[in-house]
Length: 221
Image (cartoon, rainbow, N blue to C red):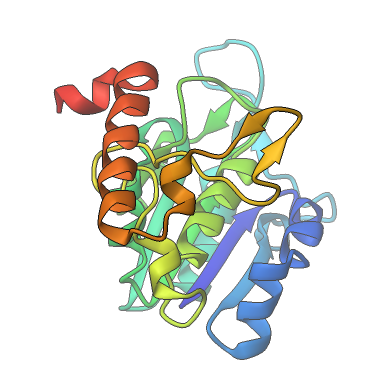
């Protein structure tokens, strides 16, 4: 998979690229990740990428020309263009599975007060990671990239991505590790029994309970 990130803050991705899963996938050839500075496509010595909104109002708007010129250079027939924006469709695990099938993703990170409306005409998807406002689309883009990395074939053990929250419509069951008794807080006996069938039943029951308690909206679906 190849992911191209269009941003005016490329430095925000410096540490992200160095995280274990991302860097390992890049080194192994499973992932091509390029960070493209939109300012490189802005004209003039000041490389201006924003301007005041027509009609007045607070803040600045990202200009469409630098973004379109960047897309013109990197977009191919296999590309799928995404804009990270509050107006987008809420990001879910099933969305991650769909995006993981594409060969090339281009993620546009908005900034300032927003993006010129004409840029949205170039998008195949508009995605939001939640009902709140951030300074820019860089952090949401990292969220999407991180979730996709776990689904790339060969990135992780297959079983590690199956029994997880949201994969079957439920939250994941409780997990424990050593010690079996910590200050009187004990691991459930069933998990120490070695009875795989009973353990599977317990986990399914607990996943149901956790979902009912913390995310009853998932059950309604």
